[in-house]
Length: 427
Image 1: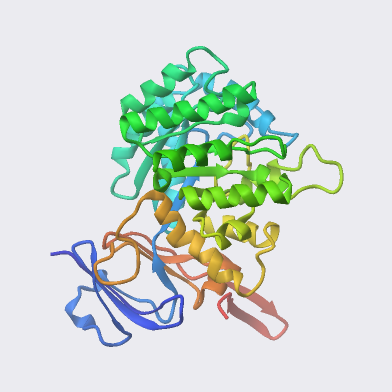
Image 2: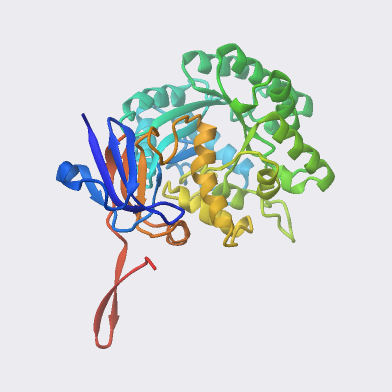
């Protein structure tokens, strides 16, 4: 029997608790101090000392085939989505299985160190050898001790921009990709974009796969493919398995049309993922002034009952040159660019980071109650606000009751005229 105790931790609501995990599942949640710490081996218990604990985090949108390639073979100087795609087109010609696996594994380890135990990665299926797909399907098994990895078959260059791209997408799904993707706004015509959505839905239904489409990732108010996806999901009653990623054109839609689309998404059950690091820099590049912020309508979507998750998207690649794979960084960007700086927004942001992302990934036993998966994160902060404010180190990360990462508290030494003083960033 495998057991682990996190003692004297604090829930998001401020309640002090002890969490006991047995055989990978939360066995008990007691008021702090009531668990028998002596019943646990020293390396199987952790005194959180009043630190925040949450269920482990989920990264719902990332590109591990392209991670850590920024500057190779060139930097994205314009900062546009189009230049990023062009640079990646050159880089993917030299992919090898070992190259992709090495870079992806390093980024996965960064994610794990930040409390992530589930990752959904997109992989380019318009790369004709499907080397990236092969690498990530292999890696999916090799990193299973750290994360649950979902692989999305994603036709980066468009499904109908080349005759064989549809065949490659089908081959990727038949080879074992977990999720079906598309990118209708990158097709040559509106008609091809609509066709690509319907083809992706057909493939998903045929192979019993969820859908996660890059969709309307543009500032163009005329890009309206999310309505097609939501309509198909509603008619086929598959909305709980469908995700619209990015949907940034929503910020440019006329309000009347946006209201209609939000209502359709809510009725269909389709989820939405916003990706603040990338879209904060990619969107608005064709504007002079004022420059649009580049995020979907998070407040209106959540008010309508749509599940909205938050992804990092890129880590050191042609679309976003920065990042260390920390979901709290993505949320911190959204605080500013999404006008989510109010005190009440803290709860909304953490709902996106935890429950919403887990729901999109398809986790059924998620939470901080007996019977839930024993995958938890302890932050070097006493509250959700302070954890986000400082992007606090994750002092412990557990995956099904097994410790997979730890970090020391963050401190610094300040030199005063009368001596040194060590400071912490916790309030």
